[in-house]
Image 1 (cartoon, rainbow, N blue to C red):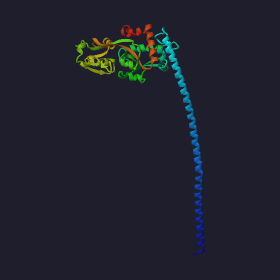
Image 2: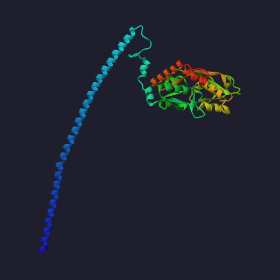
Image 3: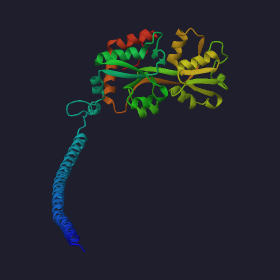
Image 4: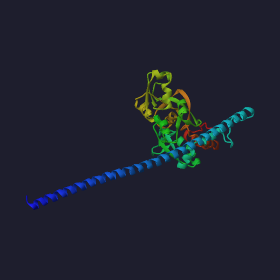
Length: 355
């Protein structure tokens, strides 16, 4: 074997050994680094979470302390309220000359004190507008005229009320069969459009005092053979859907002898009468009188009706402050003659019953 070949082989072996040593050394370094760095990371991790846990414990201690203070405050308040209540009962029991209408400490009535708990009036004043919900076909209380303007007795009264309250009247047409929902979801601030008072509405809404009397009557064409209640047997009667007229008719003694045909508005009901689709329309007397006088159509009203009722303004159940402000303004308008003036414009006399 040549000498130079032997030398080359020897060099390769030495190089390989060195490379192997370097690799081993690198592996040792990597292992050492891992073994050295891991404890450091673990230490940092433990310290961080100890800090987090300590902070959480500190916060929890504060919250517990606050809750204890709150519980003490609540206990003190309850004890004070109980003491005042017992004192008030004792005072009322000993006073034989106490006024039947209770008053608050500042002299305001209990009703006024309750009204102070809601901001319904202030919201209307802040907005600068009072939104009135109505069926815009309900003549003569509130309806759309030939110029596209919403007019009527209720509208004129509401305009005057808004002027005195310092806000703008906004007229918002609604569907009468969803009036309670529209009011409660905030589509309007009130329903003011010949709204009849009944038990269901008193439960669901906050009603004003009655401002007008009304009755539910039957209207037929001038040449109709229907002249009295007994003649209604077997007849088809149209009524506004969702109205108190519908409720009255559906619960009346004649309900099984007639066919009830609900429709969206009184205007459409009268159109059906004119076309002969129905035989009779059952509706508010105030509407019937206005249509007989102003429509130019040959209608007549039966002398017999089913039920007398009254109109009121409806507010949301908790909107006592707004309701009271409107009621107070109506009373002032009755006293100074403005309400009577508007009634004479629409009905020829003052038919309002506001006190």
